[in-house]
Image (cartoon, rainbow, N blue to C red; front, side):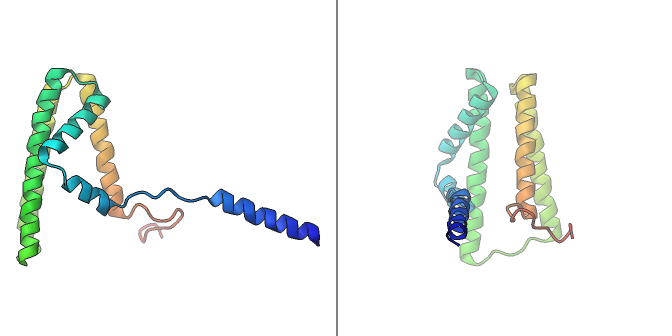
Length: 160
């Protein structure tokens, strides 16, 4: 009987240790809030430095990409400010089908223009790396929209 109790305690202890504590990661709201506190200049600088590390950019490329990143960060900050103002004033309403289509077209046009600018700045190897990173980011965003982060083994309604 003593042996069974000792074995049971050992198994419970091992299971407790194996589970361990999960690292506390800041949720997306907290990360988003931290990013919103940055100025467009700070955002552009950070993004340019990350790209420099990833793509091994030279000085001229860094300056050109910084301009693109600053332009994008400024536009994003302005759009967020207008959306926040609409939300607070109560004028926020769901966009119509035509408005959604126009917004999607504008977004895609901006992405095409950015891609063309990047192609003119980067060499072939750097551009391939950049495109690969962009596709990974797009896939990650798609996964989040689909409900990624569910418990392992949990099925979505489409899989059942």
